[in-house]
Length: 108
Image 1 (cartoon, rainbow, N blue to C red):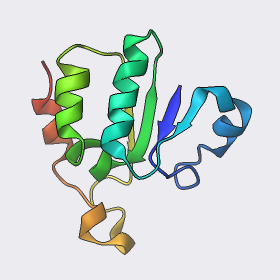
Image 2: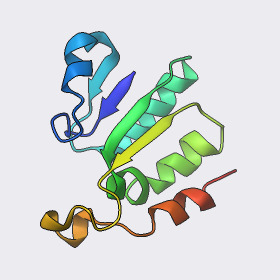
Image 3: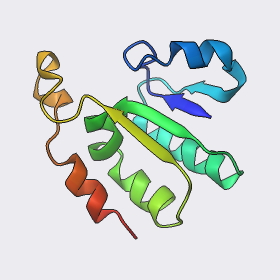
Image 4: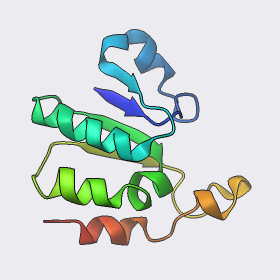
């Protein structure tokens, strides 16, 4: 299963979504919900891959990752792009430097 938070084109997930529409979920700009859905899919035996920018796949959803994924050892693959300062044109709200630190602290 593949999930994205309204970044289908930016993450180049178009080919997957076209080839496997029954295994693709567009959650819209709702990263926390995307992580909750991914945790639920993992509970049901699926292997979900989530995709969004690094800032939104770690910082914004830290609580969901910690509580719903890491604590119960769910098999969720968190895929992030545009880490660090690489998304400079979108400004500080889309940049993150603490993403690796957050995920290292999330190990249970």
